[in-house]
Image 1 (tube, rainbow, N blue to C red):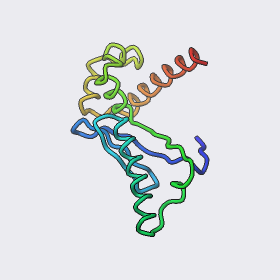
Image 2: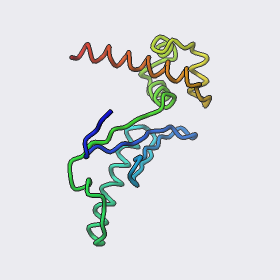
Image 3: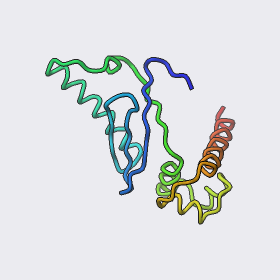
Image 4: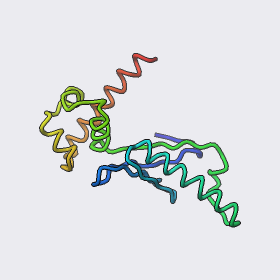
Length: 139
């Protein structure tokens, strides 16, 4: 994927305590929260605070903070599944239909077992197919 100069890349992960963290891959900013949205908002607040402090104290800060920028988020499959299951959007039965992976195995991924690469790819393909279906509906 190619992004313009004003796109920041960030990663979202679920922490062992069930909260979410988000951090920039090439910048110093990060955030945390009970939900993905809260973690994103926390990181944005940190960016705003850093810029404001830099202005007040007279030190340099990343120039992208003066411009409009987008943040491209990536999230690992287990964190994404956990988020959708705990928020009530998906059930394990629904995820089984999306991914083709049985519910017992999905449950273990939601509770700490790291999927093998092949399983990770199945999960990603399932979510991409779901995304394509939704995009076709709303196109």
